[in-house]
Length: 177
Image (cartoon, rainbow, N blue to C red):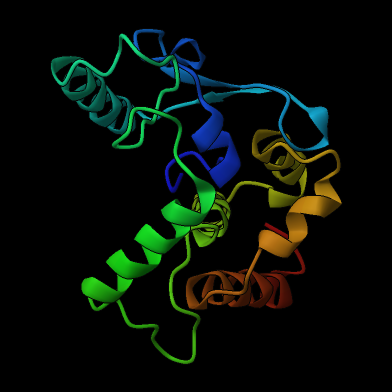
């Protein structure tokens, strides 16, 4: 979820046929998600390799025969949202992942926010026109309108630094990057 920005519910509902790890690039088929929208989500090669390892393990354990759900619970069915959230919360606590500087403790849904901010930060570092790219990110996240993505954009120290540099260049030259 951190590497794709998909929703928790979308990850839980993935079927074997929705995960195309041998495609170039590897991709996920997200079907009839929130707002009844479907979309194709490309997967980074490192994520695809990890998912391939998961599939091999799942096959070795004999889980493939009983369910077409991609991510399986120990009982062989689909994952339960509440149990997944509890597991994530417990794992964060067990790993002693403390929130720093007044931030919130990591949450499962927060992985989606992390993805959006990392993409936005990368574009800013590259000098890309975020205003033009934001609608694409909105589609990628499965939102009906770009405005629905804006609340994912949190001011991080790095984004504020990039914005300050950009403003300083504008103030000095009168030219927007």
